[in-house]
Image (tube, rainbow, N blue to C red; front, side):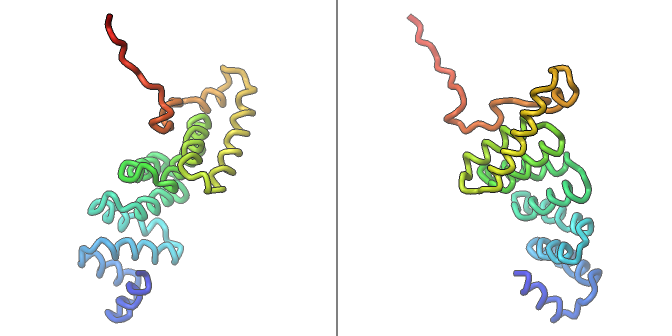
Length: 186
């Protein structure tokens, strides 16, 4: 797909980045928006990708690859954890078992130092994708950090932060959640 976009650039003699950007904006086609964002990533211009990815998501809110790329820019280049979390939660809204989106959401929790939530998230991700070794490695790192924090007094700020917003049921598979059976009246 990227090679096709590059051939199109050559054919249209769009050799400057500005020329390519104007071409895609005028066309209104969303697939080239993603391809352009990838090309900008290749040129080490991640912040220039954001408007094109936002336009892509506006037209196709379930474009998982676009959301992954946008979330990565938010977390790694802009340090905007709120927007990154929105991207990853959006992916999970459309594809609840998307391992990459889920793992990246777990990373947001780690970055926020919400280690209990991150551990639960990574455990859930590992159950969904047991063959993904990187999830298990990241889970072990988070559990080790959480174990150290649990040795601190409950009033320690680091410990309070590690458990902030933690809901033990948030990252459970439906069959693992407690069921509420109705009682029969006699």
